[in-house]
Length: 295
Ligand code: KIV
Image 1 (cartoon, rainbow, N blue to C red):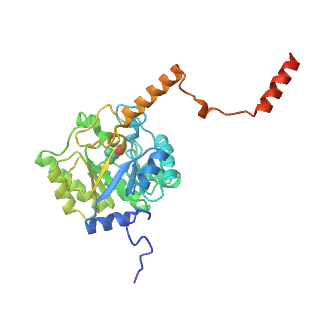
Image 2: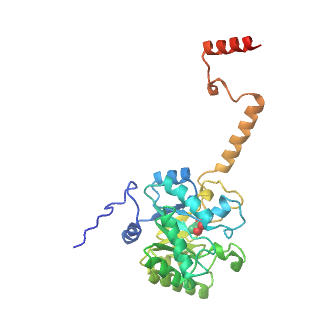
């Protein structure tokens, strides 16, 4: 009889694995996931007991200021993944494969997926697409790298979609999405993100799959939920998708702090005595004496 030497409970103090993802689904326990791109945010998310951190290529929009995710490179991703890996101990860490890092050839996809684990401390990778990516998913999984799929509104195809729009609202597209989800499961994905698709379709897919679905704008029937952290904490105000719940307004708070800082400098309120470094009086007098002698 094989003995499970991994975590026996889901305490946030334990390292989350893809195996725990699957068990959570079987037990009907919702999976929590957030994005992070830096060390302090990863630390806060990890300490909050969130199951999974995705270093998403949303990095391009919410941190690097691009219009979409397409300009994000492997080097950008690895740099931010390393910072996240230094801040998180327990959450399952997933690196998002950027545009053109897995579409050109299977060999390149496998090599790039491997870099996320070997050079950046990730536990697995996520990539976008359904039937067109099956060989790629299979090859990466065969290398021993866990793969999370991503269906529905896949932002790397934004130009094909004509914008960031809800997907699979017509029955033909819905059928195709259901098929894609099954195909990704068969190809070896351990989980699938469903983005911006009708809630009842996401529920149906979640019921049909053995692997957990993680929804973003896909309703409560998914096995887990993910949000872009900068949306959740109100740090990215260019636009907020309808499906986001904002739990804080950190952009406003940050801006207020900067304005107060500027005003304190201008009025002389900062720095105050408590921010100054003291010099012992006798040292000061000696300095003045020596300066006096020097003329
Ligand atoms: O890049 C990202 O943050 C994502 C999530 C929206 C799932 O892919």
